[in-house]
Image 1 (cartoon, rainbow, N blue to C red):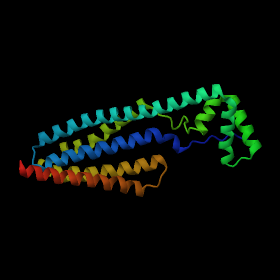
Image 2 (cartoon, rainbow, N blue to C red):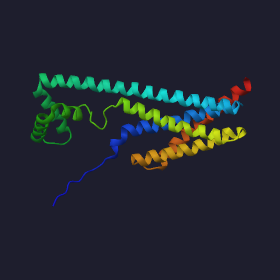
Image 3 (cartoon, rainbow, N blue to C red):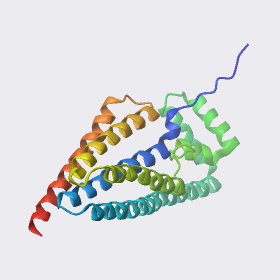
Image 4 (spheres, helix red, strand yellow):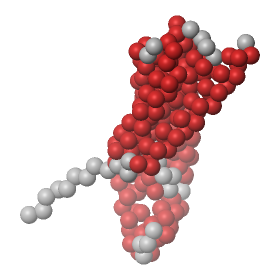
Length: 231
């Protein structure tokens, strides 16, 4: 007896996972870099905390706005393509059927089977068939501006809280090394969790996220130290 086999593919996570990893990574790196840069300039702990908190708020809003605008632009492009395709289907469905059949022939179907598949798919839902196979737009990859904005802002905030917490818990004289070390650990964990969630191998993504975070914090600390000496 045949049983239905329901598969769950990891690619369905790509939309929110990209925004989540980007938001959390940016939250850790930008806030930790800001804190390390200000602390390296010999600022008092209260000023460091204020700078970090302001960076958290500004960064979360910036991430949300940036993701919303960016993904909305993608959604607008998708809508324009779908409107154009809808018009072509209304004015010349036969040409659209031949076009779809041509796509299937390029994928390996013979001429007759490609025409039959194209005809039957268009009879069921012509626009969906063309959106998926001609334009590459599907439910999995279609743009979702609000989801991307909310996910980025939330994960940025979660990431930014980590270095701020390290400031609160560290002695004033050790803010830089404590925040630096804690942020490296947070970044490594983020890389591992992101890779695991996406089904990828863990080591390379973890090293990539950690390395560039260390570079960002190191550069910012150097700039803060130089400017602190000047002023």
